[in-house]
Image 1 (tube, helix red, strand yellow):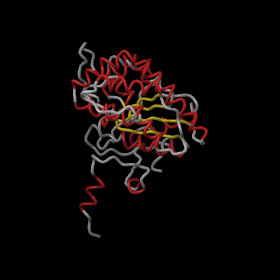
Image 2 (tube, rainbow, N blue to C red; image 1 turned 180 degrees about the horizontal axis):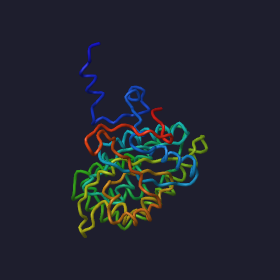
Image 3 (cartoon, rainbow, N blue to C red; image 1 turned 180 degrees about the vertical axis):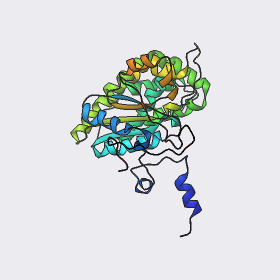
Image 4 (cartoon, rainbow, N blue to C red; image 1 turned 90 degrees about the horizontal axis):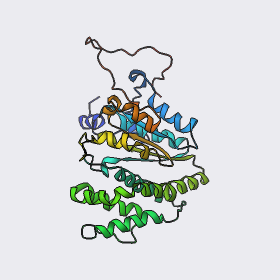
Length: 304
């Protein structure tokens, strides 16, 4: 049989994330739980579906960049959907400038992606989120010379235009920070009371068990310093971690691996009240250079 080099290359392209729910991608997926040393995704799924199906949970997921986190999170999404959860997965790098992120930026990105996903459900109707609309009007008024957003724009469209402009303009981001900073609590309250809580209630009326938001690529936020000297990862996940976990739905955030080994790890776990789940690399060689062989164990499942 002749090898199709183009097909082989596309199948092995490391920059392409496998979407496990896609039958074409599924055939290339390998469950490495037996050699990684644990069933991390199963633990995340059980925490949401078994231990706390009706209570909001917040999980932290990390690992080296390129170790397969996105593929595993998309697998988590597919398995949660099989359990009748409504899942919103998005890559935060599409909305945020990862070298300069603030807590309000993450909240707006979540509001946009959740609103956008809910709009795709024709049978689900939510009341207009007046607080969020008012916030958009305030931003538009502040930046009217730099931003073109009509008063009638929907929440996802309005936020999308704002984040797209802010991502490419440091000057615009600074103006937004000055405006959004004092309003962070109000933004969080509006997202919870006008968007997430009503959405969860409506989804359950339609037979869903809950809402799960998976925020990928936050592990890629740069280790730059804020103007007052605090490293960005510690600022977001430690100093502002309590706000990240206050969303009234199930949330999974990826976070930088460096935080798992920082001096602030105890404070971080206290903020989120969970230990970060680490996805290990797939071992190939032992420390002595010999080939790594799978360790026999009855507690791990090989394959599907």
